[in-house]
Length: 146
Image (cartoon, rainbow, N blue to C red; front, side):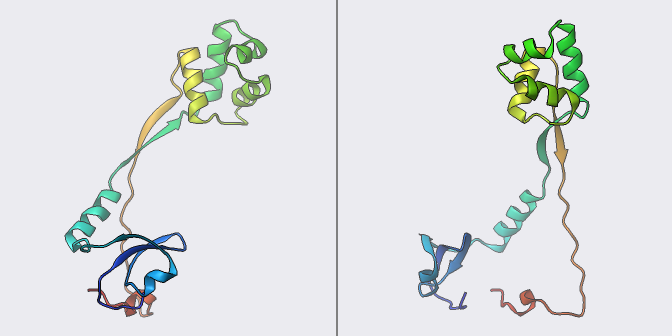
């Protein structure tokens, strides 16, 4: 924070982890003493890993229809179905009408009972945003990077 080039401490200040000197560490809670800062190569590797594909589990779009058809194929009405999966009838009704999307735990429970697929995995890519140079200054322009 102050820019002193001394021994650093890893500190949490207002829920943000920062590397600060001993004097500035009084503004937060010390987590650890820093033996050495990560190298620029290591920082670059961390950033690259953060931009890789992320695998997400999402519920299929046509879940209301799949659930209703599977329930009807078992010759169950909503009331009996709700009892068997230990849920309220109103919850089953909202899910089947599409007014409420089940969370992943509920979707897994329905998949197991009805023997259908409701959850699928998708890859999501986060792209780096190219920074454009403009004629205005930001706070980052004034920070001295070691």
